[in-house]
Length: 131
Image (cartoon, rainbow, N blue to C red; front, side, top):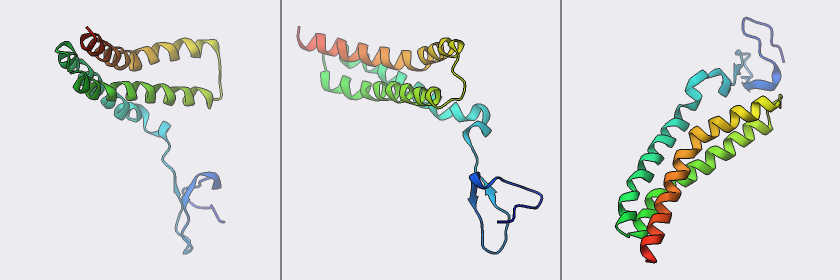
């Protein structure tokens, strides 16, 4: 495989190499996106928190099924972000004690509101149902 030319890519990140000799295309990795890589996560977080806060209304009225259906996306987003951040930490090269402090703070900002409001809506609906 000839990689000489204006754009050289190591063979490990080649996306496609055409038999005609066209230049290979490098993969676009997540760290190349900069701050925009977190944009879908922030959008999912914001929408799920809004749904969970809105689920407090049917929970206060005792509508258990509607409250659970509205708060379940927030809980799933909270679990998903937790798994995503754990995988990022596990597969990172540097594990220092300072990383755990910063990861804990970021986790609390991203996962705290969806998990709190989702659990609060389900708990309130359950208490109203069994009262």
